[in-house]
Picture 1 (spheres, rainbow, N blue to C red):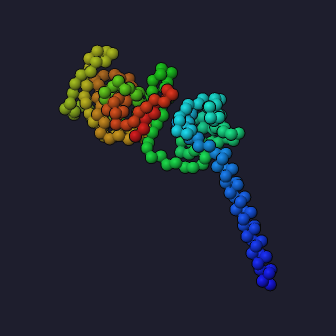
Picture 2 (tube, helix red, strand yellow):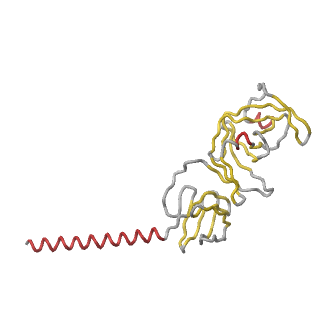
Picture 3 (cartoon, one colour):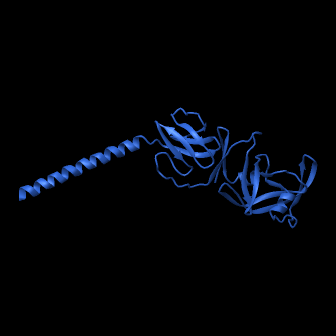
Length: 225
């Protein structure tokens, strides 16, 4: 009886060791075939990827030096091929399957056909289209846009004048309660409201940009809080 019990225990130990070895082998293989490729920017037919600390921009059909091939990309996700395997990636995950929480809000902006950077955002929770303008010392908008967004500029005691394409124009300086772009929220942003219809677009100037991190990588503007 004792001999039979010992034999059964040895059998269970052998089975357990075999299963553990198989699990280790499968885990090692899974890690080896999942490279640390991360998506940091998504656009139509393009994706900004990061591999081993270096970022690069790929267009659909292109292959990076590390072997990453971009099959499809849009504003929601990118489909890539790496080591003969395909992976669907979003801004919140990596190919290796490890979730990385976003510590800082950031947005990547592609240049348009005029090589200008435009982005959707909000002023005091009212939606607006911005034109990024590093040459503007403050956020600037026409009185038409200011009125549409409910900005009370007429009661401002700080006034001045600016030079526009049509000549000199009066302006009112205000402080915006909140300006948001791509999840980046900055309170108390100084802005100029210009009498008339200039500028045609709200200019995202340095009174906002100086309070965040801004860099250009491979022609893509990256804003980060």
